[in-house]
Image (tube, rainbow, N blue to C red):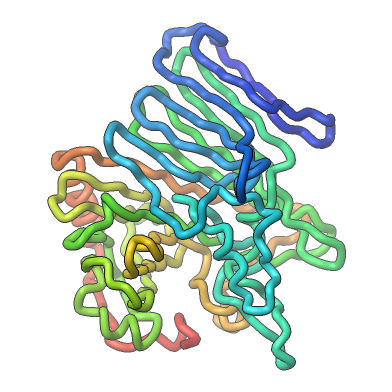
Length: 388
């Protein structure tokens, strides 16, 4: 079977490939129509950022090893997935001041379709009693470059996998290693993100992980809907209380509006599998996420309703916990602990739905999951979920 692996980065062996183009001619086999290209961006805030452009013949997407193995953009035909950020990225982490006093420096680099929040903390910034920043917004993992990157292609099946290793580790602190594989196959309208987090310390390490998966126009538009199998949903704060009657529907771009955030306990199949969908107003385009509640038990919906120039975007966010301050999450028992050498595996599959038929089929699947639970809509923030 023709299968080949290319090592693009390996700091242990002092290997770094600046550019490469991989096509079926380099492998052989029956699969065709795909390509993988790696290059380094130059100029502006993106200077020095490595990108790996994967085209499986149907779906094209861009992996960013320099930014914690995030996914910058994706395209299927005329469908563009991602969002228009006020930040002109992808941003080199060297320009992101995570530890600026406000705790919001993470936003200086935020413009991906998919990025991770964690691994030590993943929620709101937290300060000590003297006002010093302890945990910055959303943690460090999205701004740590991968130190090993490989591309594997199977010429018969057309399977393409980009694997990167990222260490969030420091002296006198947590030491976690993430091995992330982003995989797809020739002609497939989706991709799968599989992350294995390992404690590489001789002492226990704590873990929070959230997948911040973001979509803007044109998929996000007035009348667009999110379809979620709800067991329980609660507004995060008073702003979300005001948007509760329309929690699943998106309004127009509204300059000056404040983000609305909702926390969910999702319904799921007997084995924990669940699915959520974002679709446009006409119901003829959408994107869905599949994951397992046994791995990612908490789900957050983020609705940023500002003008597109300021970030008209929504986030679908499966996670190990809710993105509240870390001390609150720890009090509620949602901060994980990994023993020395212990690993945990997480998987999120993203599928693009380019027509009404596939959108409707996905809605029916979610409706079937919903049958296992009667939705409970809480009118006030849940004090066990939200610190606000």
